[in-house]
Image 1 (tube, rainbow, N blue to C red):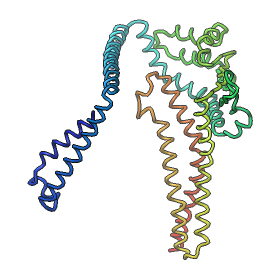
Image 2: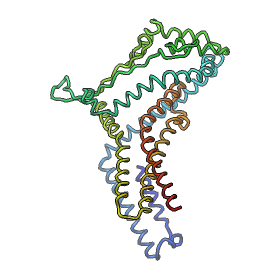
Image 3: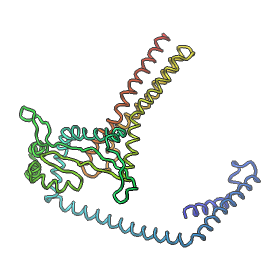
Image 4: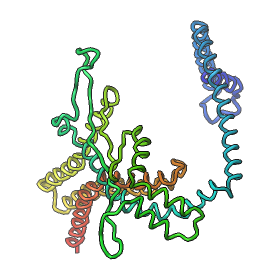
Length: 381
């Protein structure tokens, strides 16, 4: 329909074209008329093709149009309902502003910077970073994982003739009992029931201080872990004595195939930096042994080392910088404050693990290019 309407519009434009307005575009009036005639015939031919297609597939087109119209109507109704929900939520927020819910949110705004800093320092940058690096190590070692039986093909239960790909992820764990300097000595303390409670107690301006400390203090009790397990089991998680365990998921069929492809890509990509660097070194050796004069050699070698290295370094720094400030560019990516902070920290950890080797390899090559440039300048002097 869009194509048909566009052709009809173009047809009207071509019919309305006058020689006086297009003198500069054609060599003569005859050429203009020839173009106008050809264009009208082309458009008419395409319009006829669409009409023929519509006649041939009339029933199918009507059926799809009905489905589209019904879907569009449902979508518009849902969007209206959503707008109503937003308005209701805003009314509730305003009405609850001075109530318990409102005061809790006000307290959370005061606590958020301090709690987020502790979580980043004690959890994200340590255990979570370690587990992320483990996950990256798993994804970037396809052939080793296949040898160890983590990637394997097994017959389906329903039919022995059908072979199904399986990918078994490693077991991950996060310990809530972390190292902390407290009262003049380093010791293991529970992140939620001790460290965060200490942070909450530093604030004298909270309206619900007692409620927060009570909630966090329960975290390291058997009762607290019992209720936590009831909630966490739906996500494949469990907690015991402050240790959160992530049960290794076993992916099958399409999901396993997608992960296998990702593992192969990541496994090979980690060697890419060495391949590029090796090619540059080979080019350097070729330039060194070529018969051109010394100045030309040095100039060419300088370019070989500087230009590709500068591009890779720029790309790596850009990705690292973007990972650190991604939520500044896309502030609405997450609505939850805690999730925002976790994502930002994790994004940088992942980017650093992937691109740090590139910075080392190509940073060294860039410095070598600078030295060659200085050598050229010295030779000229």
